[in-house]
Image: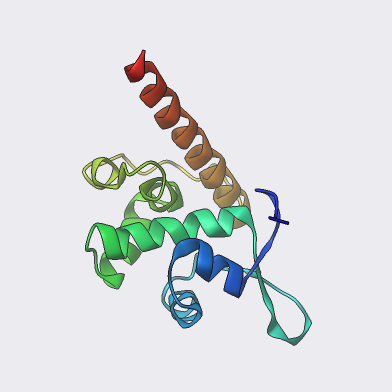
Length: 138
């Protein structure tokens, strides 16, 4: 029986879903501070759907777009997590990389709140991309 789209994934399930070895996910965790899976007792990792979205964006940027680790770190620092996540949605990574959006004020939000908003924005951008694709087919 397959897990639902909102179910947590183990590291082996996440690695299979993304098509990368488990050790790569652990390595990325050391290089990208924004990759933070939940850890249970004994250090066992569980990946939420938004963690998978972030990892997929990193995978697309590194393997698909050819960015370096420092390049992805800079993209995250300059343009935010939403751009990293959006790179993994619908293949619009290169369009996102060419966008020079101004940095938004933080409005006193905590880092966690900003991450949640970035995930919501990335989800909305993904939905828009899929809707645009459907409209083009009509």
